[in-house]
Image 1: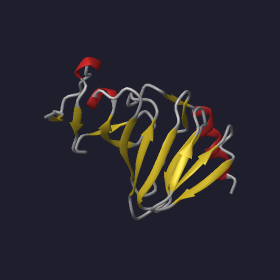
Image 2 (image 1 turned 90 degrees about the vertical axis):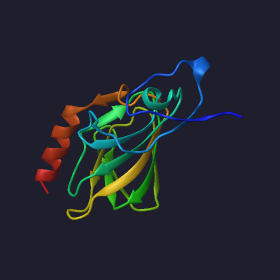
Image 3 (image 1 turned 90 degrees about the horizontal axis):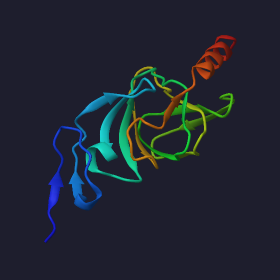
Image 4 (image 1 turned 30 degrees about the vertical axis):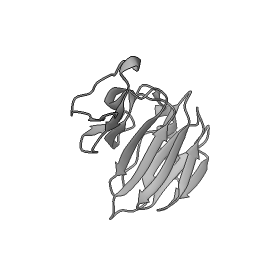
Length: 155
């Protein structure tokens, strides 16, 4: 009978010939390059994953991430709690409202900025990406943060 392995709190990389099932409890939080806090989930570092990464993202009331993209990796989001929004596109010219129970797909290389639409309630989403690493594929786009800030101040 195969064994079920529970990962420790330490980050680890598992050799491909030693892969096994891994059970993780979402307890450890880390701040991503995007400026938001993630609960560490399935990744190359935590479970030895090779082609997928999954984590919980909690955005505080009124919180917003930094403009970024994942150049070679697709992202799928499922909204668990609260209402979020996402500016996206080459100039962040497009906008989506993602509410509880919604799925949201972000293609590889698509610039985006997630934010919490509520000033009172935190929002939590489940994020899955085709990059098994936790932060390596994140490319920050500060010029788009400036563009978004200036366009919102004109409203």
